[in-house]
Length: 183
Image (cartoon, rainbow, N blue to C red):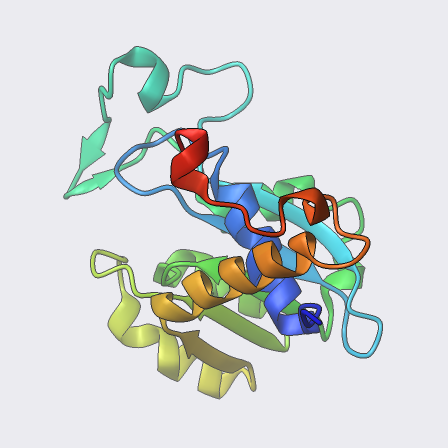
């Protein structure tokens, strides 16, 4: 019998789903915010994208607005998750799950929102100020966990296998072969 996702795996899987809406093809990333354990409820989420009503990189032919090696046309996933949060006080003591390394400015915003734990999946080598994030989090008492990108792939497969199991929406495809479907 397939095993359901743990709370952390679920956070990671949902954060990955958010990144599928990203609108800057230099890096499609996302952030989700969760209430403290044991509740672990989704508070907010966001992906990297231009402000509402403004053209996104993907819409203007990948015309990136570059400053010092970074596209500034889009808000970062952390920024959009904060903008989408209807009650910032609910972030206190909670968890931020991020696809990729946060930049220093976003990490500073997370620390300022009193997030207790930041788990980020993979490393974004071009994150501005990333070399200072560990110190920022340590000084703010923020637990930070780097999750290898390979773990994301394992979690996606685990979720897929669970959905093929008893009661799952893909149960009629127990021997699902994606290649036979042209996928």
